[in-house]
Length: 232
Image 1 (tube, rainbow, N blue to C red):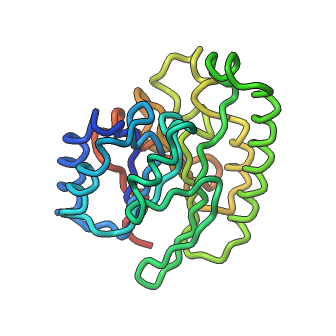
Image 2 (image 1 turned 90 degrees about the vertical axis):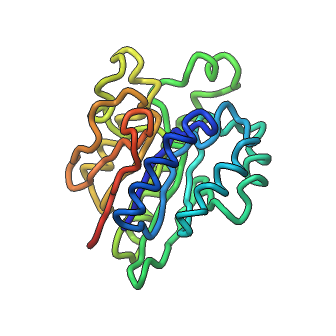
Image 3 (image 1 turned 30 degrees about the vertical axis):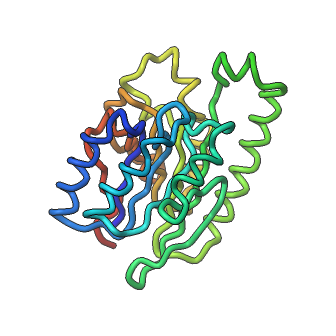
């Protein structure tokens, strides 16, 4: 029972998300909620306390998140402090969770862009070499995920691993929304699903690439959390 969402940009979409989330929990309580980045808006965690208190009033399961582009590096320590004990952030990390006797392995990462943004290209020294290293380490982590013993294996990233879920956005901007080079990893399989956000205008909720189901769970696109697994 895995539910996922992203891009709440708290407090921008707080009310709409909480209303939709409460409706989902009334119909079926998820065992875990995955958040694919951009939980906060423009690096500001000041509204997270109220948001998490309201969420915790009807959902008491684990919250697992990856970093999005609006979880700014320079304020991320503030985000960690604001969510301490409430959100488990996976920053290029693999962790296994026990869901009522079934093992769920999640690899969390911000992900990679095919082309760094203009801001990144002009403000981050050696951004292209950093990107190459991100691709290399992500591929290594995907191999670790494949070799992990678990009933369900999920990749949780902010950026998309395939052009198939970018449809709905301007095509000229697709290189700054994800890294389609990971379609090779999807084709290889070895894990069950790849959950991502970031694609606010994406019209495709889910698509199968090889044997892996890919989900765009960005809240501005979906208007509700997305069920990744209801049962096994």
